Amino acid sequence: MGQIVLEQVTKSFGDVTVIPPLDLIIEDGEFTVFVGPSGCGKSTLLRLIAGLEDVTSGEIRIDGTPSATTPPAKRGLAMVFQSYALYPHMTVRKNIAFPLRMAGLDRAEQDRRVEQAAAVLNLTDYLDRRPGQLSGGQRQRVAIGRAIVREPAAFLFDEPLSNLDAALRVGMRLEISELHNRLKTTMIYVTHDQVEAMTMADKIVVLRAGHIEQVGSPLELYKAPRNLFVAGFIGSPR
Ligand code: ADP
Ligand code: MG
Image 1 (cartoon, protein in one colour):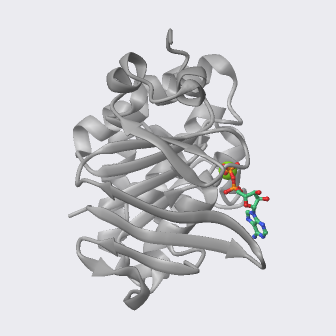
Image 2 (cartoon, rainbow, N blue to C red):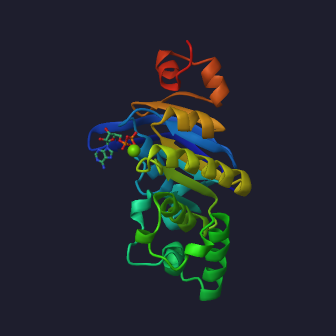
């Protein structure tokens, strides 16, 4: 569970093409990082996969099922937003349980999943607090918790750490990597930060103006960047 295939996917806004035809296979369990400069289409690509935007043409398949036939909420994907997307008036418990309440799960199952996620994320002692009473890192963990409880086939992260300070970013980076090691769930992580890409990814997808410049492991991109753009972006000695 968790293979994502993009076949000849394009996206235009009006007459502006943001994603020219693009093919990509993300294998089940892989930690894939989309990296590239601001405006290159990273968020658009993630939103297409999540179903928050419709493709203009082409097909996205999740575990073999064409997305077009599946409403976004049923695709088994969970998008992790930046921590400021939390509800300030709700407790941590209610914030994390929110998607489960929307899905109509019974209270006992909600509690079971919330407590399990809280244990994984070291939030057990904070379940009755409100977001305003938490540190930036703890708030980010709550945002991740809200994705975990849905038990998704894949997690989609869109620059989740960009509003944290540098020291906290390093810690959260490690935590997300550990979470991936523990859950072994497919994760797609969008960033414009080369260091995040190089340290977290199994596979890096380097994007430029909506198309893929190169796909490979951090080591492959470092050792054999295909061109100067990739070399410059990855910081390798070409
Ligand atoms: P990134 O996340 O890599 O910074 P985006 O995917 O947000 O890039 O944006 C890619 C391009 O698509 C940009 O030129 C942006 O202005 C454009 N774009 C994104 N969303 C919309 C939209 N809803 N309407 C029109 N243009 C958009
Ligand atoms: Mg973006």
